[in-house]
Length: 345
Image 1 (spheres, rainbow, N blue to C red):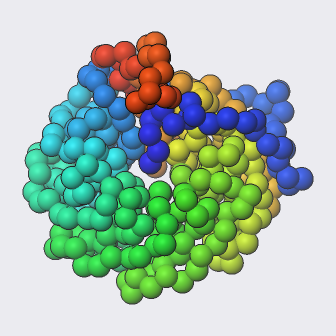
Image 2: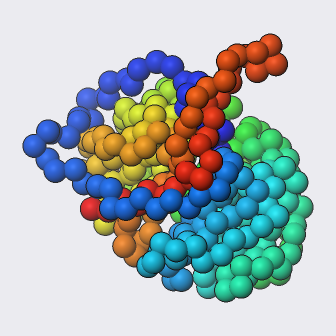
Image 3: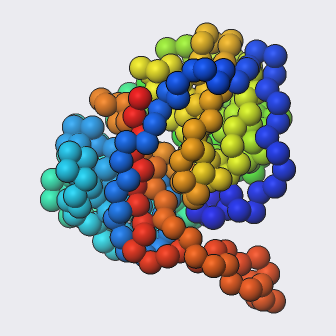
């Protein structure tokens, strides 16, 4: 995913929705509200987070390690270290293992879900980023943002079994559970569709007028993909035809999206400090709602059992003065303020 402060570099205003979208009325109660804020502490940046709904644990990428929280107590359950440039985490409860992408070492760390100990280290393409497990194929797909490819791991053997040439920089990916994988390409403004078993690329769909797509949410039941883009739009596509069915305004600095089946809504996490809730009233009608979160909370995970949402961020300090070497400096992160926000309905 993008730098955790990339939203600060974005400009412009949110665009108006198409005719089939409308904002939620002011009289409607917010569909999600903040339940709890948990301070984790430590220093450094962050990216993806992931939920293990069976063990009720939350995995947080944080600098060069993964912090693990118990979702019942919100206490730290452990740390997985030696994950340089960590981006994504994919716990797979049925296998008792999880997978972590390490952007600096171009590797995936395989770890035991019970002990949190590393069991293997596997090579990937350049700058592995997003990762997920596909139940249909029994494979783990690692999206190499710097290598324009996906590394494919057989989860039964933890061996690399193939590579998919994607033709662009991949961000988030999802599966339809029937053998197709969909992934955003942020530099070509496309969704690429490939076969989970043969690895053959089947389709390339434009997300125009969306630009720089990152997060990808999926309503499998109604065949709707929500590709969230850096120019303040979520593009809704039919996952069977690739047709764009709607464009919806969202907040600035988006990097993540999830779909809540219980609420029939896609939720985007926006680095400006908001959540955009896209209510799917029907496969052709959408309305939006904006909820305050916190500055920098740009990635999101959902617990499919409680339907709670989790975001990570920290507090910011002063921005250093520009220099020749760093003409656009980032705000500093206040040490010890790394935290998790939990939202519920």
